[in-house]
Structures are given as structure tokens and as C-alpha cells.
Length: 332
Image (cartoon, rainbow, N blue to C red; front, top):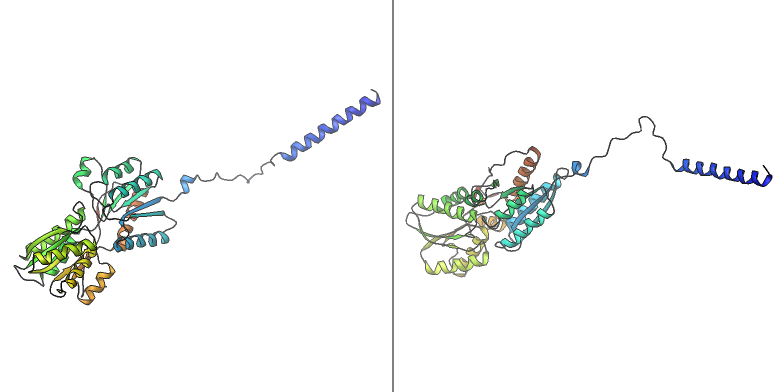
């Protein structure tokens, strides 16, 4: 071997050694005994369930109170679930509520807690949610049982007995009247189950006391509409002794109508829901009574039931929640 050949061979050998050393530096170090780590939990295993709360009009103090109660509950239970809360601008905006349910289906939430604007029209889209594997809980306004049966779907209702609550209010009113007196009812949205039940509860109480219901008209839960309806009723039935309002917002409209007609204090008003403005009027004597279905806890009852079903995979069933009479003597 001549000197030139020897030099080339030596360079080749040196390069090979450097390459080998470089390869060793880039390789992962050998795993030591006891260094092995347990596999990380999947996102599915650690993910908190996302629960959607879909309410009616957030312009209504009742539903704002409901939303605040739900948010306070989630804050205290942040390790258990996350919350998405939505509402509609108008009590009767059924199509918007349907869109909200569709959005929650697309977002693959684990549960939907809904206070439907309509007892029949929201069932189909809620069935779609159930078919997508989402737990659906009905609060506040109960779904129509005949439509549920027709669509072969079970959606548990968590909420008060509205008929019972309205009868409590009606009974309190009846004690201030005498047999044969005339009264009128301001109803809620006719397609809402809770509106129908409250009207029935008022009727039960008036029938038991032999008090005449001279008229019964819808004001669609709205204060302004109630003002107009009450004004017309006062004109058409000048002998009215009381107005039974299926919602406190409508009671506020009725109070305004009495003032405008210079009949404040002459005609008794009762409501339903126990919003703050009515609480003050009860203390002042402008409203006799209302029913408290505990708005701050109503959504919480539904959320807790949804979490229970998600955890236990049990068969859902209706759950009745409290409703209480509120008068000046029983006010908070």
C-alpha cells in the first residue's frame, strides 16, 4: 500500500467513526428501570360534560334569575361540568329556540336543559338531540304528553305543578271576595302548558269559592299587552273585583291599567312567579299574592338531574319541584 492509498483509507475510517458518534448523540437515551410513565388519559376520559341551558326571553326577570342561579351553581361545581346558557329575545320566538337546540347538537354537548317557548313545537328538535346521544331535560314549561307519545320520545320534566301553584294564589284571593263576585283572568301564551295549567288552577279556586269568571284572555306573558287587555276588561266589565294574572309581568301591566283608570285599590291583583317588582308591590299592598317557583333554583334542579342521568345512565322520570304562596304575611 503506498502512502496516498493509506491516507485515503485513514480519512475514510475517521469519517465513519464521526458518523457513528453523531448517530449515537441523536438517539434517545436508554430507558432506566422505573422510568416508564403510565399512558396519559385520553381527553374523553378527563373531559367535563358540557351542559347547555336554553331559556325563554332573557328580557324577563324570571329567566335572568334562572340564568344567574345556574351560573352560580356552575361556579361552585366547576370541577363537575361546564355551562353554556342561551335565551331568546321574545317569549314566542320558537324558531330561534329550535336553532339554539340545533347549535347545541352540532357542538355535541352532553345535555340540554330547556325551558321551551312552546310545549309542542320544540319536541321534534329535542328528539333529534336525544337521537344524537344528548340527555334532554325539560324545565319550567312542560312538554305536551300527547305529542311526546306520538313521537315516541321520553323527556323528563323537572319543575313545579303550575296548577297547584295557581290554585294556592286563587285560594288566597278567594278569601278576600264573596260568592258571586266577578273576576277576570289574564292568561299566558295559549300553546304553553304552564299557561294552560295556571289558568286551570285559577279556575279551580274560583269554582270552589263560587266566584264568577267574567272573562279570560291571553296577554302572552307581556306587560304591555297585559296593560291593554286589562284596560279593555275594566271597560267591558266595570263590576270586576279582581284580575288573576298568570305571570307577574302581566300583573305589572294590570297594575298600570288600574292606576290609569283611577281604580287602584278598588280591584285586587294576583300574579305568578315572585319577581322583585311584585315583591315590592305585595309589601305595599298593590298586589295581594303571587306564587314562587324558585327561579334561582329551577335550572339548577334540571342541571343536577342531567348530571345524575349522565353518571348513572338511569331511566329518566319527571321530578316535581317546590312552588309556594307569597303574600304580605309570607313575603321574604
